[in-house]
Length: 172
Image (cartoon, rainbow, N blue to C red; front, side, top):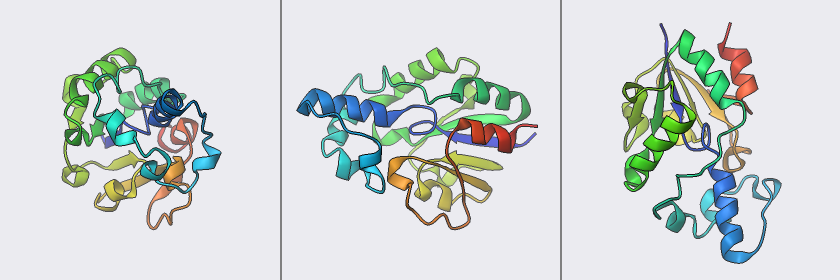
């Protein structure tokens, strides 16, 4: 059975909607995803790092559309691992565990990898929204579209825009 590594933030968890919500709480301004195309998260959300390091940020993040049902189906055909470079934000560890328990209960604790660098990950396929995580990966790679990566050169990676595309590519 092939191993599938799936990023959490930006692929399963809609961090952009959370950043937009926090930005609105601070400034009263609502941002659109279109206005962020091609800009890094740091450029769009200058206080984003403060939010990520604040207790509670990961508690109520929305789930990316269609990810639950499609990942559950993928879990029947692949050895699925949810991989998150969570060590940079230690407060997030328990929140991410609880979030996965709540929204992806079929992903057991042995299928969760919280690490510092994803270059240690060995699987057959990886889905991530950051090229830096895909570039060092030796298997098949899919870049999940987010505003910060919408204009990047894909190199050897394939782009997927949503979970329905993933379903079409990876499920029989």
